[in-house]
Length: 638
Image 1 (cartoon, rainbow, N blue to C red):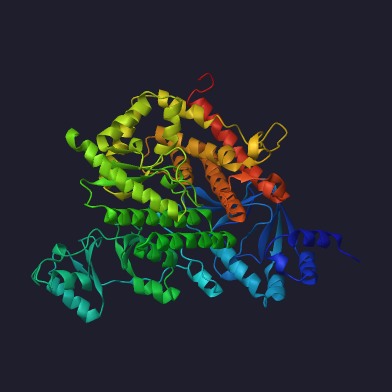
Image 2 (image 1 turned 120 degrees about the vertical axis):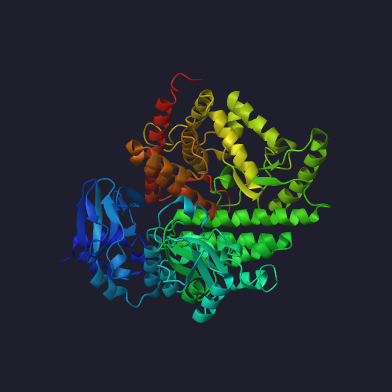
């Protein structure tokens, strides 16, 4: 007699990986042993540090969130929708759960017996590979300010390698140290005795204050710059770069890449102000990984021609596609591509300076604006950039500006050849309007803030999301101070920003149908950028500016910061952060699929599940816009 329940379960499972890789008969047998779990909102499936279950899980209906309990609050790390697999810990490693799984709404979950599943999939390499990468993508990595510049390691197809990238780094414990009053001679003797390539200089509280390597001794002692009896503080590199005790292999490697170092100090709480507990070296990382996953960045840094730079950047699209296929967290993907985009821009500027007849007459800073300024640019889009140069006497201004305009034309031309289109509105550093001295930029921003109009708000949506990519960062820091000081003098500007942030209503109509474009070539297409992503971007920008928070430009990080600052709205801000990441991932997949920007979507091409996931992201948009209306009193504002 047929088991109708098992057949229905099997029909559902075969639509999703890894079950679509299981033979039909085996899948039906497996479906017959599955436990159906009904959950009310808030019900917990397993908690952090619980012993692993005899099952892993797939969402049938509803949504389940994976949360990290940091001891005081619960942070949402991921939300699993229909067809998503979670709770893979017991399939991969026999350790307690690292996350807490809680029903985000009324849900139905299938519990898959591990023993039976393994018996029908042991010889299936594709399934094993999928499970390894799915587990890796759900490994907890907190979103912190320190991690905003990190990039994720290149995907390596060896399944044992996949899990290595997410393992805790095997650093040297009880590192060799010396005190701040030690001489270089005594420190060098210690290095010889222990046959090590570096020694950490610590203060009386065992906090790391500097590091001395073989290179320092060669370059500063052997050359005669300092005597052998000099204090270690005279030649040490300071401050040191630090990491947490539980950092992953990937995180350690990427810290080294970002800071161009070969040694990472591990401290008790990960900061420079806590006790030293270990040292992670580049050799430790390579010994674990077996190779270096930094090919693209190295190619960019070594490129001497635009052709080489373009080839290196295009490899990033392949990397992006691979990450999406392997279900790597979108926050990591965003960090990867942002780091690569910044590296491309830096190299384009370096090559442009070499083409100029003379070095820059004064210091300057190159600003990435818009999506690159927020570190959210995943696909090739148009350029948005600006340049700030140091103040000069009035009689030298025109000549100085002409120099930087010429430099900017070289840079924007190179970026265009790499794949970043020219901005149709000419919001680029090659335009005199966006290439100014520090004082001129101060005046410009003050004018936008104190005399807001539609044009000022349009430009603000681009120019208030900036990131210093190259040059004198102090110019940008001083400009930021000026902007926030001016913002404290007016509330009218916030009203204009708020009015602009709510002008695009929730993407669903009265009968929950998607609001599509009505005219022109875009007719009947859904604009995911303007109707869903930008309302979240605009809301996050306004709220973070109103809180006078500096240095947090990324949209999902802005919402996470707001969740911390406003505990009463924590759930809403976390939902907005998740929605933004999910929408960005969806847009990127569409762009790669159709070889375009991904912003215009033919809804007929989507599955029912894809439409469901999109709709789930729209609720926070409506709720955050309601918050803006009340907080900035926008009801009667025109």
